[in-house]
Length: 58
Image (cartoon, rainbow, N blue to C red; front, side, top):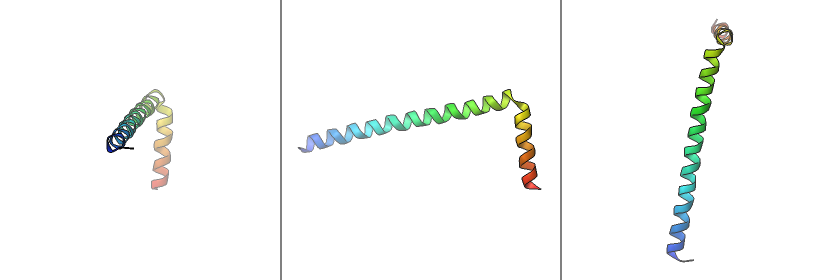
């Protein structure tokens, strides 16, 4: 395998890794937004979680 082929393979791998990282970041943002939406839709759950965290603080 020549140097050109090695360079091309490495460039393709790095491009794939970049796409995977971008996809993971996108998924994390969507999950974060989904959790935030869930909290806004269920104030009783948020209140329970707040009380639980206060119990741990005590």
